[in-house]
Image (cartoon, rainbow, N blue to C red):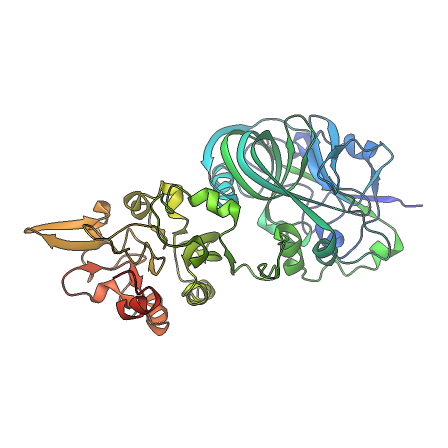
Length: 479
């Protein structure tokens, strides 16, 4: 029979994390954790506590059930189970739990959210609050509102002998897409030092308003929601004396497996992106097309949708923080651009934002003012029937605010974005500047791109494009 070891620990047997909002740690909130994410990822799916026991330690949280039988959402004191078909069940009190985090939710901070485009933008917004209040405590968050789109997953119950979690999910994960849906996202934030006990950063589960559908959140877009934060300064862990648990090598690095288990999505065809890699290419799926139709992919767009490719990448900003990025380019250059962005990321080259221009209503000026890097945005060259290189997805703009476009027209200087005028002095020293010594310039040049900073009649320091002769070969009718 299993017995529990209750450990008041974070690292090195520390009893509590002391934070600004806690006057006395012994009276503060407590995050109760069952086992380790590291044990779950390695395939320890045996239950350690019952649902009844778990409920005595919190009314809000996330987790899973014995055998990884679906996803757990604990909300307002009720434990919900999102099973493999995406529906919601209420587990019995005797059901057991191999991994979970719960707390008694008290609201310490609230924020209104709207127009949050994706998971990266949500995490950025959440991290802003965490950094303001104190990044070394735990946070449980409830996001209640309307979601433009949300992708969730669940999984079938595993049978012994258990496989590692990422292997199990590769075969037994189910996914569901919901649009314009109301509900609640329950999220957990763990500080960076929790890397040996849980996964640092955010983890989100969703349940809809009528409590009939839910799961682990893979992708998200928020129309409007209110985020309530519970800042928690105590930590309690329940472990097992079970021999299989005690024999596990819990100190080994399983970060890659955790990342795969947390973020991997299934695709219906053989062209699915490699889940081992955060850099991948896909065709323009219906979900992606809905995001760009009528914006960058305008009603008069003459470029076939089939000629475009979606890129998923990572990039670091000036502070060295990693972000997910999205870009749409022509299929002719997709592999090249992906390789360039991968090399820039591996070199810690700073790119502040890589977002679809559609997040700015396909308004280039707004995108550039936000220092956003992007590519495809359909338009014709003024007073012609010739499609621009951005309209063909054959040009890429990088760190646009600090590398503006400029030209003299009728004796007057034009600058785009207008806020980029201070960065026309290319002898000055400032962040994100592109010149001939810059790695970004060198990589694009190696891949056959021309740089707008070399033009004689105008300068476009942000701009890299495929030579006109090659474009005329690919699209002979666009002349």
